[in-house]
Length: 131
Image (cartoon, rainbow, N blue to C red; front, side, top):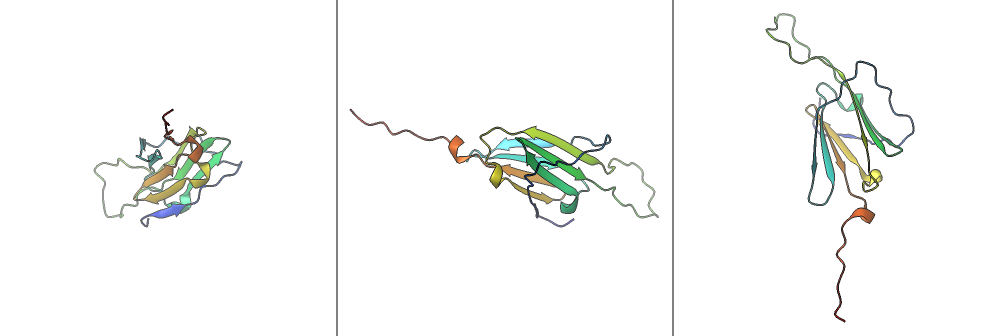
């Protein structure tokens, strides 16, 4: 898997259908100083070509297909903690998110989504005039 693979956000009505075996990936969410929300999604084994991020009717969906780690045949595993999985997670977006400018990158098993705040939702300081 190569580093910093950009992912296009698809704004279409047809979201992927996860199988019954899909698991919800671990997600960290934080807000940056400019009001953008950043999601860091753990999707081990999935590269750019096996990740699908879409926005449809105010719902952000994340689907990824993680592959099993290939262990050389001469190795006898003592413990197996990682098994490739299909990942699926969905988030409702508020109107404060600028859906047209969402950015996504995948690197080292992590999908990073940056959801900027819409300009209409940003805080505006009102000037007070003496009267």
